[in-house]
Image (cartoon, rainbow, N blue to C red):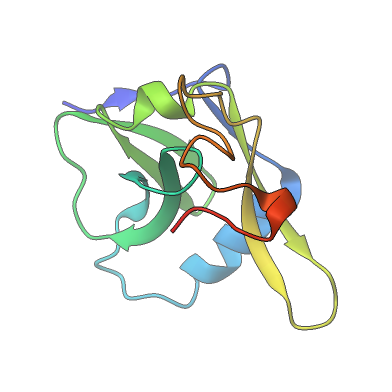
Length: 124
């Protein structure tokens, strides 16, 4: 059985909740939620993303809102504790979800891959 997540583990701002609710009105009825996931890579060592999911697994944590659910697997949850998901719309067609309060992962950060943003480089 999936676990219920609380606001100490993950939060969504009001704009993020509104946008998610809007998106869920447009998707197939088989979609069970939006899955937040982590993948290795980048300067921080971990990148985060979201995708629609049609399954909620026993080892998933679920944060339920009116009209949608946010789903996080137990491998990703330790990296997301205390994170806030926001939706930012600049009004110029450049709107996106952002992850605020990301924890610092040891050994990561810009410059740890041998490139410096000051020299115009970056992690590849």
